[in-house]
Length: 621
Image (cartoon, rainbow, N blue to C red):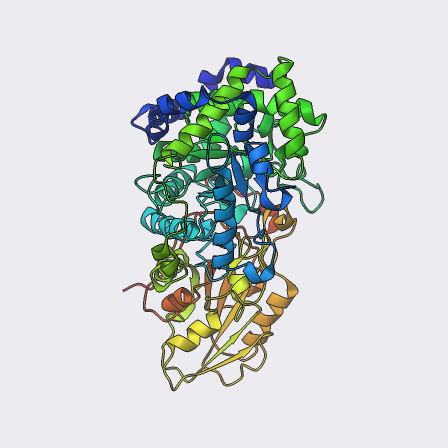
C-alpha cells in the first residue's frame, strides 16, 4: 500500500504527457454533455424519491434470479439483465418474438411502480444480438481491429443496435476496450488491438454506432465500455482459478504511469464519444479489486476523465471480494460504484445498503450521486419522455437478421482477414479450377467461426441459424463445373487442384478460454499434414480468438489466412480467397514464434515475432 500511496501523491509526475492528453480530451466538447444537460430534471425527480427508491435504482437483477416479479416494484429495481445465454425460460420461446415479449413484460411492470421509472434491460451483444437465434453475427473485436477501419466498426455497431432494439432491449455491455498483453487470456478476442491508440479510435466508433446521434432515438441503445481498467494487463498466475485459468480476473501489477499510458486511452475515447455506462473489472490493480478502488473509479474515471454516466458492476462482483458482504457493499459504493449487477442476493443487498446509510457508513450524498447519475442516463435515453414507446419496432424486427445487416457483416469479414503467407501466388483461387478439397474441423462449422457469446455464453459448435459456413461459401462461389469435396480430417484430397483446410479454436469465453499453451491441436496439425500428402497447393484458414503458435501448419501451407472469429458470414472469406476482394487486414497484435515469446508486446523493439504488428500481405497489382 505504501507504493500505491506514493503513486497517488505523485500522480502528475507519473502520468506525464499521457495524463495531460487524456485530461485535454476529456475537457474538450464531450459526448458527456448529454447527461449533464439532464441534471436539473434528474434532481427534481430525485427530490421526490425515498431512500429505498434511490437504492432500488442502484440494483440490476438477472431475470432468472428474480424471486418474484413483484420485486420489481417492491425493491424499485433500476435494471434487469439477461446473462450470457440466459433467455426466455421455455426453449420454444427463445426466438425474437419470445425475447421481445419477455423484455417488454419487465419494462411494462416497472412503469407501475410509484414513480414509474422504467428499468433499463441489458445484455452482452458483443458481436451482434448473439443471444437470439437468427441474429446477424459479426466478427469479434480482434477481427475488427485488424480492419483498422472505424467506419466498418461504426456500421457493425449500428446494425447491432438495431437488432438489439428489435428485441426491446436497450443496453449492451460493450464495447470492450481492453488492451490484451498476454494472448493466453481467454478474452483476448474481445480486444481490438494491443495498440492503445487503435483501441481508442475503434472503441469510440463502436460507442457512436451503438448510441447513434441521439441516445433517445428508437434505433439507439446504451453502450458500456469495459472492463475498467487493465483487465487485459493481469499477470499470469494471478487469475480466477490459478492453474489453467491463470489470467482472467487476476492482478495487474503495473504502476500508474503504465495504467494511464496503456489501459486508459480506450476509456478516454469512449467517454469523449459519449458512452453512458462503464463496467469496472473483476480484476485487481496492485492487489486492490477494481470494484472497491476509489482512486480508480472516482479520482481517475469520474474526476480526471470527467465521466458523467454511471458505473455498473460486473456479474456478482461483490462475491469476488474476500470478506464480509455488507462491508464490501460499503467499500464499493464509497469507491464510486453506482449500479450493481446481482443474481440471488439482491434483497440482501437492498437491506444491507439501507442499513449502511442508517449507520453512517455510506453517506446519503453518495446514494444521491449514484441515483442521480442513473436517472440522468435514463432521461437522456428518453425513457421518461411523454409518449415514449417501449414496444419493439416492427420495422426493426423486419430487418432483424436480414440481408442489409448480413452485407455489413460480410464486408467486416473481408476487411478483417490477414494474409500471412502466399507463396507462388496460391491466392486468389480461380473459380474455374477442376476440384477443390475442403477439410478441417472448421470447414463446415458456423459455430466455430462465431466463437463465444453466440446463442450460449460459451458459444457452441455446429449450425448457427442464418449463417454460412466456409464450405458452403466456397460452393456458392465456384463455377458450376468445379467440384467441391469435403473431409474433416484432410484425407481424400488426391487428384484435387487445391486444398483449403480450416483449423483453429473451439468456442469459449472469459476464464474458460484461459490457456497455458497456444499451440495448435494435434487434430488440426494432422488435417494439414494429410492434405499436404496429396501433393497439391494447401491454403490454411485459421479461426482463432488470438495469435496461435502455428508450427508445421505454417511451413506446410502455401497460403495462410488469419480469419480470427469472423462470425456467421463465411461468404466474406470466400470473397477474398477467390479474389473478388483483395486482403487488406493488418495485424493489430504481434504474432509469436513460440510459447517462450509470450507475453509478446507490439512495441517491444527487441522482440523477434513471427509476424510483426501491422503485418499483412496483399495480392499486389
